[in-house]
Image: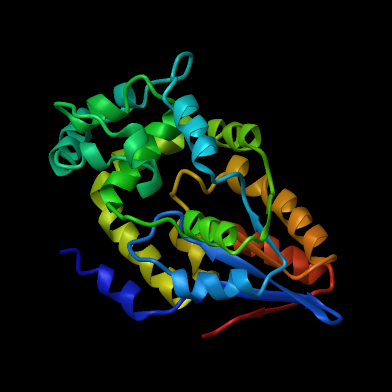
Length: 276
């Protein structure tokens, strides 16, 4: 058993920030798109107290299937498989040999992408878009079963909440295609360091240490202009527009929190971390 699971079981969700002005308060929640445990109790409380619930983009099964289909079509894009160091290919195949059936972008994608193959990367990094090759490998390495975004989305539907999205599926696909190919290849070639990277991220996340987050994730492929720089102002504008009208709970990847919260402060909002 992966011993790093235990801290997640013991700690409450700390990546929650209250933003408010006058008598209306809303919450911005930094999520882990891949998580070894469920935060259902805390997510339910956040969703239940909101009039509107926002997510980065659509999270229904049909929308995620659309993303998976698009990602599996790699025609006209460079091959991650051909660019990775052959020694790294062998090591990834060795370590992930038993995870081809679990190679998804979180558990909800499991039956969309699972297939049997003689080598993990031969199956999951050939003929697909670069970001799909990376995320499939990363999620298989983590071998986590939960996604906080998806869990909060289903809770919001169960509670009959008004659900909104900060971007469309085409917006998301454009952002994913904008992840620099070189960053993806460089990170895959550093596969031997992934365990240490995962452990540092887990520590920062479970402690809610936002000030340290960007410094320890600088090498991650998605820490780029296409994913963070271009989208943060869009996400902020959408959350602010909703928060001006009603109590809102917005769920975004934790990497977006620094940019979004800074903009709320600059706009004159009171911003404080919620500590359970």
